[in-house]
Image (cartoon, rainbow, N blue to C red; front, side, top):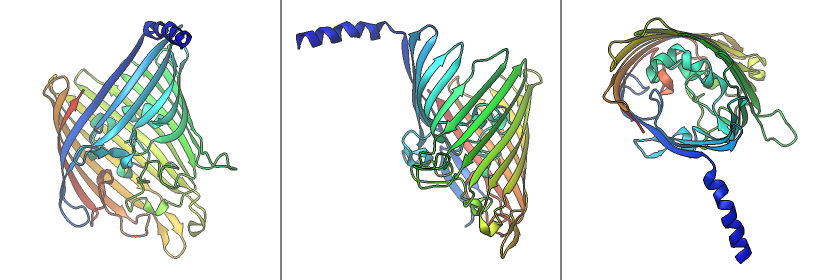
Length: 386
């Protein structure tokens, strides 16, 4: 026993001398929502999940291993503040949970539940990101530009910056015995920054995206909650593959004016025999402009257009030939460095025939189908960072 104690005491200084840090952080973003039509009529509610950043708390840390190399980790949980429950379908660390190694010279390799390359590259410079919040989310979040889904069972690499150029990639292991590719996927992205101009792109593909709760891509949350919940795309849950290609750019015109925009192509592939094994394809365009009125007050406008291509379905003719026009406005006022209040309004108009072969209806930010082709969403909120 004495020898064991001496051995342990001899090891302790090695850990004490290592340069390490652990940080607790979070965002609390609570808002009041008004929808003029949420299926059964007008709806007032509280929401802390669909804000510009989403309420969350997390712990992140790094330990210096020497030679410019660090061990890193992050665990982050979404918070549904009105109920006190975890967000992301009740998943405890539903936003992200990973551990890995980081080098200033060679980049980082991490493993766990992580964001895709759409998040790390084009999303941050899209029109949606410039505005933020549910009123400017691409209809259905089909391209995952609002992070409706995360990727489980992943290995991710992120490069350092090479004179403004960065790139990354992620692979998700399916874990299905006897079928290496089932419920697996990959995501690739790159970006370039020079002065006030930024441009980025990403591509991702996932096979068999719908599975039991906690598996697959669309059903990655503990509860199995899926973003294929509205009539816009719920008819495509039988898809055997899912892919997204997205490009975005932003430009800081002056210290007051910024403009941003993006284009994405989303495809639900191999829809099965009832769709003649064809694919459902969507094209999404957005553009936004923001103006900083003062160091404390800013405002912005955004426009989004989504077009769904027609898909032939046995017995129903063509379905999915749908169009969505969405307009949004937001204003933010800083009360301090960590606290702000903001308001946003979104208006959406739908037309055509949805994925179920019915008349297309509006649905802003997947918060509920309207009973008509129009919908208004208003959000008034307070946000605090710690």
